[in-house]
Each structure stands twice: as structure tokens, then as C-alpha cells.
Length: 185
View 1: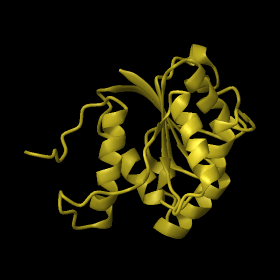
View 2 (view 1 turned 90 degrees about the horizontal axis):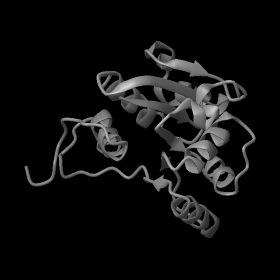
View 3 (view 1 turned 60 degrees about the horizontal axis):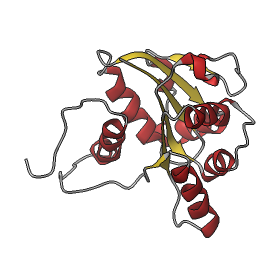
């Protein structure tokens, strides 16, 4: 059983967070605690892209950007995995430089210092050299950069199915068991 925190930043790609939350909700036999942290911009982008506020309807513990009393703000909170989806380049840059100015960057710092699993679903295109160097820094620190790059060999038919090709990969990276399309099956 894992404790997982999902952070959503203001990058475009709210569909990825939505699909992830839906799938994680169905894996509650593998997750002991699921927490959600969204930036103000993430809520605005979600409303623009998905035209709802359904993030309020998931069975998760909600935290604000300044809630430094959150259990995952400390290594003693024993959270094993943090997924930032989508991860803006601003958030990625602050994590890479060790700037813990809000709960997302503090939690990422904790996950890295405790040698646990940080998965950043980068959502930007194209990358500039600063983005690439920040991704390298996080990778060298033990984090995983998983660009929001869908695959198409499963022949997805809806936007949710396209997003799921990325989300299923993230769930695999988190070490959770998921019945999904597998190459060669």
C-alpha cells in the first residue's frame, strides 16, 4: 500500500490529471492515502479545458499551496510517490534549483531527499535548453521526467484514451499494478 500525492500545476493538460485521478481512484486496494494539491492556475486551466470543477469530486485529501502542515511536507509523512501532472516548466525549474517556495516544490524536495519516487509529467513544447538542463538536474537527483507524449499503437479513439496512454505509463512508473494495453499482447 502506497501513500501518493498528486500535484497539478497550471500547464495545459488537465485531461492528464483527470484521467490519472479516475484511474487511481479504482486502485484503492494499492493506495493507503491519496492526496491532491492544485495550484490556483491549475484550477483555472482545468475550468478552461474541461469546463468543470470535478477535481472536487474525487475521494482524495485536498491541500492548498501554502499548507506546509501537510504530511508530505516532511519525510516522516512516509509518502512513497509524488506525481506532478501536468508539470509546468516553472515548477520543474524551481524543483531543479531547490526552491521550496510552496507545498508542491517542498514536497518534491522531500521526495527527492528521501530517495523516493518523483514523477514529473512535463507539458511543454518545444523545450529550450533551460528546460532540458532542469530535466537533467531532476533526473540526476533521482526524479523521473515523463513527458506528456501519448502513444498510438493501442489505437485510442477518444481524447481520454489518448491521455490514458501517458497516464498508464505514469501508473507503471509509480509501481502500481494496472490492467492496460501492453506491447506484444
